[in-house]
Image (tube, rainbow, N blue to C red; front, side, top):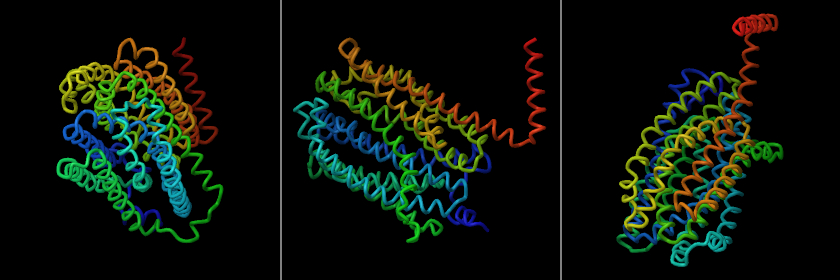
Amino acid sequence: MSESTKFERSKKITDFTSGSPAKHILKFYWPLLFTSMLQQVYNFVDMMIVGKGLGDHALASVGNMGSLFFLIVGFSFGLANGFGIIIAQCFGAKDMDRLRHRLAATIQLAAVLSVVLTAFSLIFLPHALRLLRTDELLMDNCLKYGYIIFGGLCSSISYNVSAAILRSLGDSKTPLKAIIISSILNMSLDSFFIFILHTGVEGAAIATIVSQVVSSFVCIRRLSQIEEIKLRRSDFKNEKRVYLELFKNGLPMAFMNSITAVGCMAIQYFINGCGVDYTTAYSACSKFLNLFMNPASTAGNAMSAYTSQNYGAKEYKRIKEGLSVCLMISFVAYVLLGSLMVFIPGRLAVVLLEGDSPIRLATEYFPVVGMGLIAVDCLFVIRSGVQGMGKPIIPMWSGVLEMVLRIVIIWAFINRIGLRAAAFAEVSAWVGALLMNIYAFCIVLIPKLKEQKKGEFSDEEYGFISQKSEGKLQSHRC
């Protein structure tokens, strides 16, 4: 029995390179969706507890940190996913020695990354908040919350990296277990700190850090139990080419996330300039939007793991089949969740908001993004497919396009149509990025499919079939 086969059977890791694509993807998708939804739910409940327990200003302070947090954590998340794609390709190719070597390098780079990003975040936090034109009413709470969240950044990076490695090996159940435990803990600690100890926003931040430490521990413990990827001293070779290979795939994905975050920060900048009511409404709307994008985002994560393994195994036709499955998941999610934003925006708004003005602003924002949600749902899947094939450059440039579109549109329309300008900026960014990634997916995959099809026949057979097809085409034209 081969090493990869023992690995697969003993630990129930999913090999996406054989069997039914739909069955594999759906089996992998559901635990992944529940994991992601729980993350969003406990973030959502976190905001509810802050908003109901501490008021709209506290909610606005925590929400105001969202774009900054995404800038830093999104960078680490992009690197982790990029590294995970390399590991998944090694697993798809059944090259376990190469896999262990890349895993060792990933751990080393993650440790360095944690130190650098933590120091950077803590030093520049006050300056970043002022650049965002954060209202003085919110500044004190933003700093209290931000210093704790960024001070514990290593826990978030540790979870992102360990979960990305598990997903690359087809394990979506362990991250689910980790998030179930951490979600219960986070919501319990939130309530305890805010309602019983009356700690303010810093209590919510401490609850988040503690829950992330627990979730990372669960994932790391699972990885340590897999015999076939236990690292030896020889795996830590410190080879420059290995680091370059990981960075070549990880950095474009990290920069894409950070560039996207800059665009979101620009929106936050213009919204903050309109007053606290706008900041409060946008914070609530962003939480709903993140929650409703989640099923399609998860389909994108499934597409990434599925594509990476099959690309490593040179099973290009299976990638196309997997794309159809993941796009169907995204379409169903759009119909179910986009319609809520279009038809009952007021009912959504009152879940998190109390003031009349923030509620009115939110009801203007929701229908616009609800109509355009299909664009970002498809974007998640197709972009992940491109990245899974080890081609992260065009997705990175699509992130630049997203940033430019967001900035230009909100700058042009914020003073004319209010918070709806932010909604139109989001939808425009999604559409532009989607078109770029469709192009990238086609130029990467179609030549591979043609090459694979040609390889199924001898040169003479392939030439005869091509001539026959061309003859049919000519007759149809006549």
